[in-house]
Image 1 (cartoon, rainbow, N blue to C red):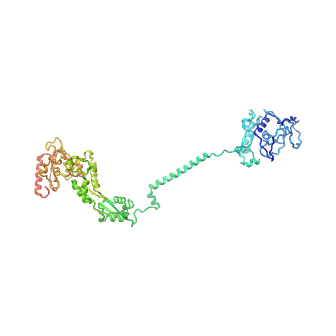
Image 2 (cartoon, rainbow, N blue to C red):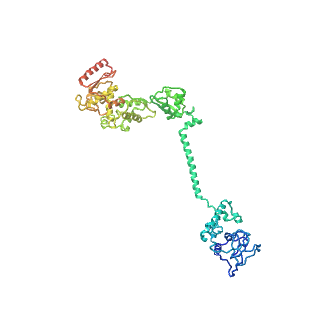
Length: 566
């Protein structure tokens, strides 16, 4: 086949030609053209001017001009190069590099066994042309003849030298390959392509780490700011004013001052009502200005967004105080309590009476027996105290406030839910019969002793004037004594007529009376009488004869004080 293209460039051999050349070289067979007679072997081979290897013959670096064994030639100048005759030797197909100007060298034939080292060295095969992908191709080591025991030793040194040379060789380009300034053996294998998938994964990991760091910084900054905002503002000079500027006051609002309130709770109340800008603005103003005014309980009308100075002036101005205060004394009935609420709040009495008609609306248990006899189920449940109501108070909200206060007192005294009505009934009698706490505890004991089934003095009757007067409707006639009609009236509250406790409470007891009902004093008393209405002195006895002596003492005092309500 031709060894060059029409334009003079070398044409690479085909793979089949390369394999055929390798086989003939291994067997010592001389290539011939078809129909040509074999050429006789020369007398002696001419010595080569330079060392010739089989690799150079295979790759075409050294041309082959003859075949078969030759005898050594005389040291004379070599004859001029001539075209080899047909059949004088095979023509190697070079790579695409220009044919080197190397003098022809005769090949000394050797046996295939002696030439086995040619393809044995560490899997190195004949060089192959570059593939279309640009990677160098080499014949696999298994394609060559297996090396003998002596072939590995001479090939180790050249292989190590080639590796060292490859490490030290400069990086070549494709232009160098095409120009012939370097070879595929000098360049070595093409480096593998970069793993784009691994690079993408690494990029995502790096992005995640960056986001995690930024998130941690942001979270830490948020925690520091929310925890130490005031300190940071103070250090950096970013403090916002604690008070509103003058001239921003608008609208109206109400602030309630309870009994005993001082600057700090009032400052919080002003902030909650929208009067001041911050919760401590008013209190800080009092401290810095050195003022300690006396505040009176009540409801005050102020404006929103006021300065602390203006708010103080408004609280000290009596004209801004709203008279929505109701004072309910202990022992008052529902009727008297509703009248006091109406007077203090301006709510019509009729509205309050209508709102009190349904006790169940406020969580109060309704006894049908009380309703059947014309009684008021709310009796005993409207706690006596001084109340300051918001100007927006209604009849229902006012009553609910009093009922809630009663429940609070019962819970504080440890009264079980199922005994609330019983304790309120007992406490209401105690509230009407005694004036002082120690006497209330004794009256509580008298009630328990009289209710004792073994009582042989009164046989279960309480015989309390307050119950007879309440049932008969003469409680508020101004006297402590019961009329004969009241004592004999069969109404369910009259304990002179019925045994046991009355059907329900007869008044609204306070904390002391409720506690006395739960914690009576120890003693055998069955009777008591107040011998001095001015001082409230009361005598307790366990026998009726002793009781009569103190009754005489009371009657003597009444004769001396005829206008004191005896």
